[in-house]
Length: 277
Ligand SMILES: Nc1ncnc2c1ncn2[C@@H]1O[C@H](COP(=O)(O)OP(=O)(O)OP(=O)(O)O)[C@@H](O)[C@H]1O
Ligand SMILES: [Mg+2]
Image (cartoon, rainbow, N blue to C red; front, side):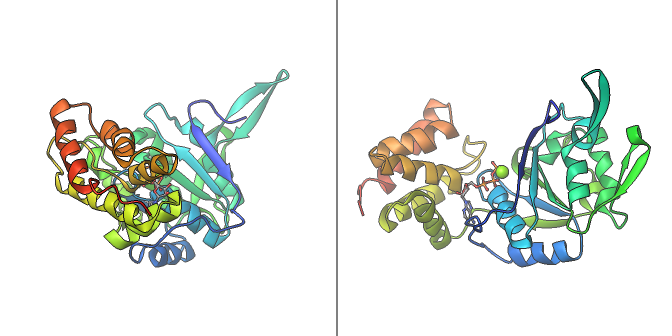
């Protein structure tokens, strides 16, 4: 039974490598960190491929992937495990972190800064040369199996300074900076993920780039690769490009009328041609 409070996903290595198109040297950095048993910190805005990257790397390294979506109610017990009452007996149930440590899995803590520092302190001995996990309730200290790798992600853009990762945690990790891909790569990703033709994909990417240049103009986040793919998929399902952009790009990005209006102007400029291919 999964512990309450934690959104957890456990998957064996996929038979096919999940599609991830490298943007820089991130795959080589990850592979080197994995070989050297160093933990990895992925930084970057929403929808830029961090999760997909970890899925592809887990496949590449042949390790199961255990993902935990972190939040501020997450407790150490949610990660490590707890005693549960079953049929009148109390039974210890491993949490996702403990499971990953025992099985030699990749443990991906998504949005790790959402978790409180008293929760993440359990990561320290795991993140340095000790590679150990003390389980106080069991009076045991586990040594991580060979394939264990701790991967955490966070989005520096919308985290408050207060919630920033502790320096002592950060400095235990190899950091990989993610950003939205270069135009040609992003077009390829949008095409591949949605099945849309190259011209429409290119128009969507140009629109996204124009929106990204607006950074700071009333938008908390700019248009991600994810929203472009969603717009392309809506277009594939029969919506006009404008309708698709409205539903998948503009409305999710802002509730503000004035900002929405300026985004619509960009849509008019970049998607006006209604190219189909
Ligand atoms: N480099 C890439 N190669 C392949 N697909 C990509 C790439 N970048 C983004 N994508 C696509 O964009 C979608 C969103 O990426 P993903 O879910 O990995 O983002 P994320 O960085 O984890 O976002 P969040 O911070 O919101 O969790 C993926 O499902 C995938 O379709
Ligand atoms: Mg993600």
